[in-house]
View (cartoon, rainbow, N blue to C red):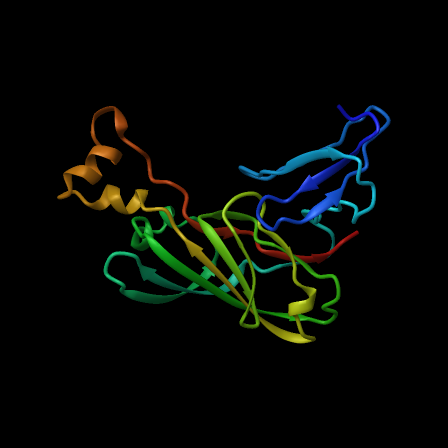
Length: 210
């Protein structure tokens, strides 16, 4: 299948295509994130940008796990609740928000001395995430690791980070005790579901490649 051909990875979301360098055994090491998806193609095209996935960590690591603010916008009634979060944690472990469903906007400010080649890793995320730096949208992701190169969005000094998380509705449905359909799918008989992890858990880190 590979004789006389060259390996490529096609990104199913962006449509980008990258050459991959196979070993002498015609193999490649893959380190995929949760529910990650890549398309492998072998054809006779040999010229192209080499695949170089972003590292999960690096040097000059700066952790941003405290000092967050969060705005909770509920999917059902549109109510908005803004709170300070001393430390990122699973929302199912916070009584006030364990049944929340909707959009959460986490915001924080980081100070960067040298923006060039900075990478951000959002850590553990449960939900669809949208990353914004200084008001500019960087990416939207719903599977795999939430890692992005953000150097071009940063400025020297203080930078605003916003991470929007759209949650699932399972935990909220469990709380609707007067809704028989919601209870059927979450709490009745052999379908009882535990509360599911929700939100941005982190740790959120910024770093440079090794």
